[in-house]
Image 1 (cartoon, helix red, strand yellow):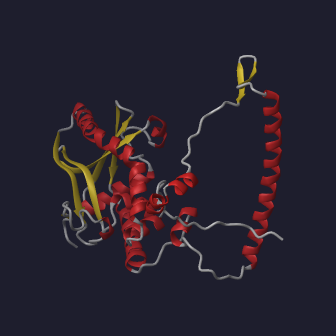
Image 2 (cartoon, one colour):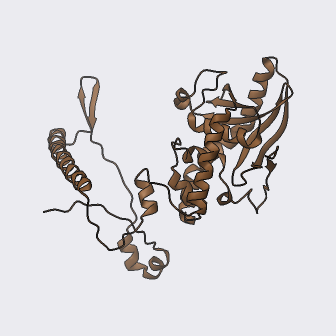
Length: 323
């Protein structure tokens, strides 16, 4: 076994920039099935180059604000963490910032460590997390290792690659509450994670075999269009279809009842904007303005421009057959 993992290229080429070439810290939680944001199928889609440029752009735009906030606060949060550690009597020396490492034994594993410090002379990893106050309940007591499981997976992945003993996680809650956590390496957990990642890379990435779907989005990734063929339902699936039909009938019935109640309430309100019970507001029925692009009119008046910029999307629609 090699002793040290190596820093990898952080330029425009090579493993440092092409995330399809390795499993990184942000992928591990999904592969382990503990990520609240991604599934193994979505990681597989990324690593095999199946995700379209449009899909990447949409995701990047949706996360741009979150990433921008985290990046802006990372250095101030790190400085607050150093102040906290030094106030407790520790000696702290900054060593590296945003260094990426490639695993010495499994080259398809890599990680990026937010910061590295010498803590009382020991080289340790540092991860900085910015957390909204509403999400702070997922974190445990200060000075423990009780970080959310998705972050624990990332931390253990980094400790496994860098072969270090400790990671200090600085959790900035809001703008001024820096809470430190101390996560020590767990060799049994790291070994299990590395085995799982190896299996994922070998079977799903190199073998080009998708993982099992976990949600509707996974299904849309794996089976975006139909093949025009039919398939015979098993008795188990027939039972599920019958149960689904029963539930849909119940939902329609309750939906019809809700619609009738809403009609009666609105008929009572007439032009009133709100209904009150004394000083307590019960409901509102207010006028609002909605602006929509008139696609039909634009296509009639500017057919060439419409043809130039129109975009066709395809999706599969699920419907139960009616008798």
